[in-house]
Length: 94
Image: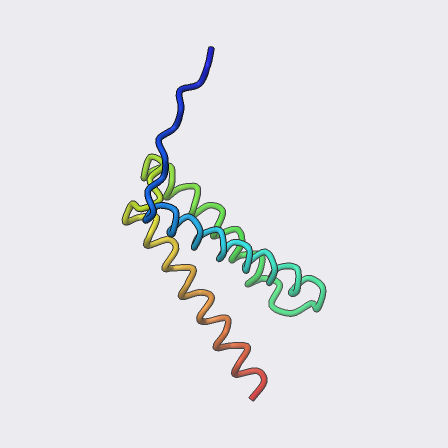
């Protein structure tokens, strides 16, 4: 049975999906760094786990809409987490 074609994403949905994917890649990169250097491992593992459960839950509740306010809030939550990580790193090198 052929699957129906999915509707095309709007430009807003593409931007939020790209933002979420970029943050996820940053978190995976930091996880690799944390595991190799043995620093902040608990934060790195927890951040990736929080992203997986948060994004999956938000997109499930939003019924696949990347421009849904819940998904946007999830992306902004991880922007704040990235900002805190940057602040800790800057503070460590002062």
